[in-house]
Length: 280
Image (tube, rainbow, N blue to C red; front, top):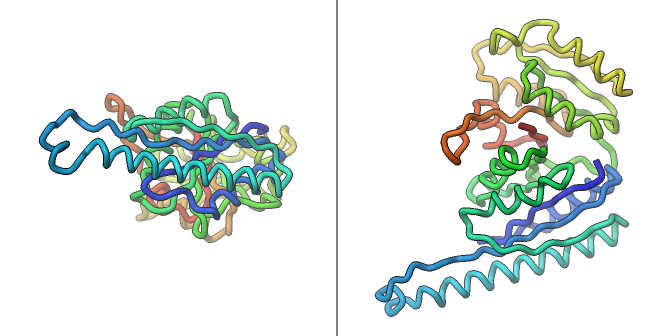
């Protein structure tokens, strides 16, 4: 995993410095190069003469675009300084997009990277929709983190939990995460049994065999879903075992351009307690 894309949020508030620091340190931990992508918002005001006369709508849009551009430039400068300090190979990209097409722009650049890092500060910052677009449109994995609550691993990779239900998405996530799992101190393969018919006892044993052939020592764990839903069951396990990273398949079904997320993906994106690597 040598080529990382890191997306900056520029509007209405910039990506915080803590997220920049974590992304660069994560690249250093993996021995990777990292490209920072900042996207300036492009507002296209409707041609409404009344709104133009009353509130100068085009002027307001231009002012907000400049605010976004200033945030982009400041974040890219901070990134370059941090990359130099950590002796990480870093490069920068500056793009421009309408807010509704932001996910498409990030997805396009993610297709030629090994993984895309997307920080989320709160559920209203728009980064979740960008993460969903990258997950379902780029063909590459995405790592979602929240500084202070779901931090990226730094310096070393401790414990990784691989959520395993035998599905195609889970297999894709396992394959995408092999380079990171090789660096981990411990890998746990989690199957939540009785959640779906195919998630049966012993399902993780063949995963442990497969990972072993890649030089990864892993152990299989099983938890009974009981009365819980799948998302909280995974979250409870991750918290109880102090994981540094959760690897799982991102589930969803298409409805025209939108994806309706599966229950586990929905829950874990809503309130992440650990950095999550998702593949679809």
